[in-house]
Figure 1: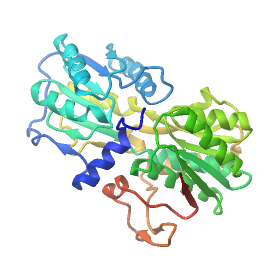
Figure 2 (figure 1 turned 30 degrees about the vertical axis):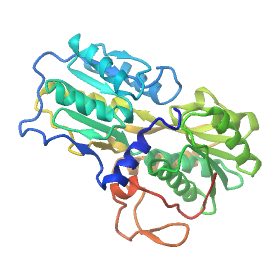
Figure 3 (figure 1 turned 90 degrees about the horizontal axis):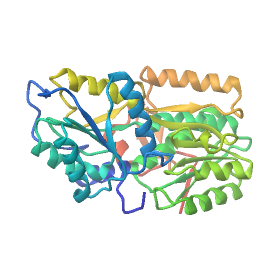
Figure 4 (figure 1 turned 135 degrees about the vertical axis):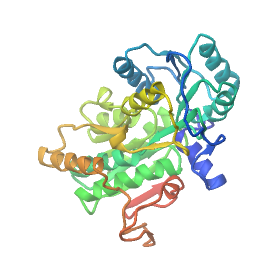
Length: 368
């Protein structure tokens, strides 16, 4: 995506900064919940092409799995930009054909989906990375810091030097929480591990990502993490003979020798049961949107690469199990790199503080 395109993290971070609230909402849901008036018919609007290798492809792969689980085909359209003049006609075309459940896949759909939900009260709307909610509208996003923490553990286990690099898009809360979690995971395996970060200033710019990854390797990093849309950092890692961890999907597809682990979207694990709730009737969307833990779908990990020793992989798997059972990545005591306490002993970082995260843990070095 181009920098001007608002992505999940940017949109939610801006919502927090502007209003102090997690999500904006329509009027409160009716006490009896939302019930479809006709047989369910689902349609999806994709922000990008279904084979983009990242964000949109993860949704398309989830669609195929959901179809098998619910026993019906899901209509979809690709390349719907974050522009009301494109979003509304695309959604209304499906609605006119009988669709009564519409799923979006971009932050920039938020306002249009809010308008559509008000205009079509008998249609259920769900939007990945959106910020608007109501009686027939629910936005949802995953806690990516959980899976990035586990990928950080893989990076710390595989690194020979303890020097890690991270190619990041923009310094927003949703990106910063992945960086910090990656560092905390690495330091669990190697307390002396450090993470050098380069922000590219764009969500999907392979040229800048290549330059950033190469620079980090030149500085001594032997594992490259990422929170950008393309697989370029993993490709560069493989070309340079080092390792990496991916984002969005299992990036062993592009760099099988280099990729140790990937933070992957598993939207079907959330959307399948959520859609079944809609179909069953009396659906009550989460008031402030669904902020999904790993145990409920959203994200997970894929791996491990051969550079992660089996005994270390077992430790990571055990930590994943602990997160599934409720372990918190951002539990206190936790201080930032300047020594300021950010989470007190016995406390957990709040969701609001997660979204506006502008600080880094010890061992993280940021640069542009």
